Length: 240
Image (cartoon, rainbow, N blue to C red):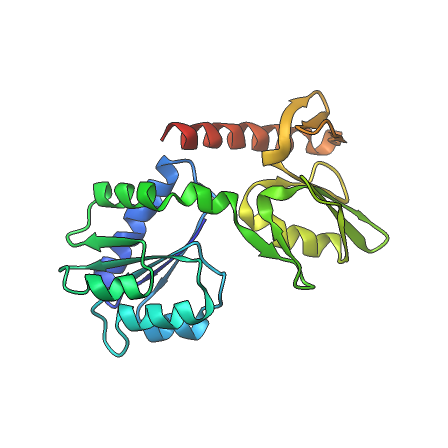
């Protein structure tokens, strides 16, 4: 899960970061990225569309207000979740213009952060997250079962579509997929999506579609530990 917090109050920035981190860990979203920005200008200078799942904006900031930053975001990204934090409701109508999904009223508490995550349904955001391959082709991350590298080409095996092939290195594939926290490599040239794994038996990963992928002896403990941790985190998400 990728989140940006934009606030020109350094204390509030650290406080929000801590509350959101605690909430993400409590729901099992341990593979997350939280970036903080001390102004709307700083954020827009570094921001690229489709970078974040959620952007939390303070409304009353110098130079550019949160509303103004949100308008800039919506010019290029219609799908990212936006949440405003402020001490009053007077900007509620403006927040609707940029399709903001949540309003955090100060003083912000752990309970209000928890309610925000439930309302925004960020678990669903993870399920429909799209990544773009180096050639610009979009793929829903959860639709990738596994990838296989051979002769400078990687084949992306998908749930309901024909395999997609792209001339790309294994290192580039891992750099693209591994940051999302649900991919690993059971042996050289293969990356597998743990969401697609039904079980691990001895030295084999069995996928829900029946595909069997061997795990090398050198990687067996690493894969077992990763799979157990993944299962535990998924269970925590379902029960949160």
